[in-house]
Structures are given as structure tokens and as C-alpha cells.
Image (cartoon, rainbow, N blue to C red):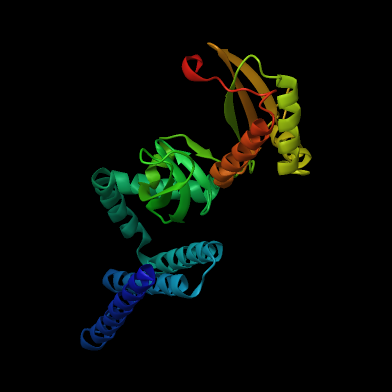
Length: 306
């Protein structure tokens, strides 16, 4: 609601500015009879085009709910307005080119971070490194992409120093797009919709591990239903697309690691990134219920043995 109100204020401000520019343009034409070929007039028309584009952009933001449709319209507005501005300066391209060259050199030095962010945005549009709604990690930031604009990406943080697990922390990072050019980006869902995670249980050497594995396999099978074969097929297609082969691929793995007087029994399985915390919680609950049903076959380390 607050963002909606801000967008309305922006639209009103830009609409008023646009009207003032149009009034100035008309007055100058009446008073001093602007030449249609003058650089001053072309500059004023370019300003009118810019504020018209910004007003339309805010109107789109207010009226269109789909973020993907909005982004496509933003790109269209940018392309059309850029072409109109170039056409406006068609009779002054040489002089404008020299002037812009000098100005660009100064601005590049003075506004390097902003320019890098804009280049990062262009790179993002052309390579689709991530989109709104994707879960990503870039540098030390991990979270869900909320909004992308020409200079920044807003990310809803997942996990932090305050909470454990993949749950939203409530903090929103505003990240300069320039980080795309310097930091590695991990996208949790673009190429393959799953990641692998694991649950570890500490069991004593007296445990009947074959019995434990059979019971857990049944729980895992019920949880994933028929999805395992689908996950395997999608992962093999991913490897094939990148000319990579993994002969030992297993969707679910069970491993045993000795640790002092007990065994670390680990279950590794695929999970949708945004459901990781909930999935781990549900499976852990079911596995513990199964363990508690058979205390004579499955035992936990107790006291100093732990």
C-alpha cells in the first residue's frame, strides 16, 4: 500500500514536470520563435520525451500487476524513448557526438559505480542471470529477488546471523547491479529446480542399520511419490546440455560416518530451494517417529557417549 502511494506521488510529480516543460516549449516558440533545427529546442524536446517515458513507466507500475509484463513494457518504453531522442538530435549528431564524448569521459570518472550498475543491468537483461522470484546467492547475500531496476536489485534475505535455516529474515538488501560484474552468482532455480541437502542422525553402533535404511527409504518414497524419476531425468538433461556426465548419480544417498562412540547417519536428498526448511522439518519428524517405534532396533547415544 505504501509503495502504491509512493508510485502515485512519483507519477503526479513527473506529470506536473511534463506539463511545465510543454508550457515552456510553447512559450519559447511564441516569444522567440524557436528554430526546429536548433540544439536548444532538440534538448527541450528530449527532456519532454524523458519525462513522458517516466510518467508512462509509473502508470504501467500502477496498472499492471504481473512483474514479467511490467518488465517487458519497461524495456519497450526504454527502446522507443531512446529512438525518439536519437531522431530528435538527427541534425546535430556530429556536434552532439563530440560534446557527449567529452561529457562521457568526465561522467565515467565521476559516476563509475552508477555506470557499472547500469552495465550490470544490461548484462542481466541479455544473459538472464536471474529474474524476479528467483532465489540467488551473490557474494555474501542470499535471498529471493524482489525487484530489478536499471541500477539496483532488491533481495529479500533468506537466513542470516539471526536465524538458522532457509527462512526469510525480514531484511531487504538493495544491491548495486555492478556486483554482477565482480561477484559469482549462484541461481538456485534457473537451470534446475532442485538442490541437494541432508539430514544427519546420530545412532549407536548397536543400531540395526539395514532395518533403519529400509524404514527411511519407505518414508522418502512416500514423501517424493513419483517425483524421483522426474528429478533424475531433469538432472540428466541438465548434464547433457552442458556436455557433462556423472555415471554415479543417485537422487538419494545414505552414508555412514564414524564419530567417536556413535555413527553419523546422513540422508542426502533433493529439495525445492524455497521449501528446504519445511521439507527438512517434515522428514525429520517422520524419521524420528519411525525411530521411536523401534527402540530395540534403533538407539541414540546417551550421556557421555554423545
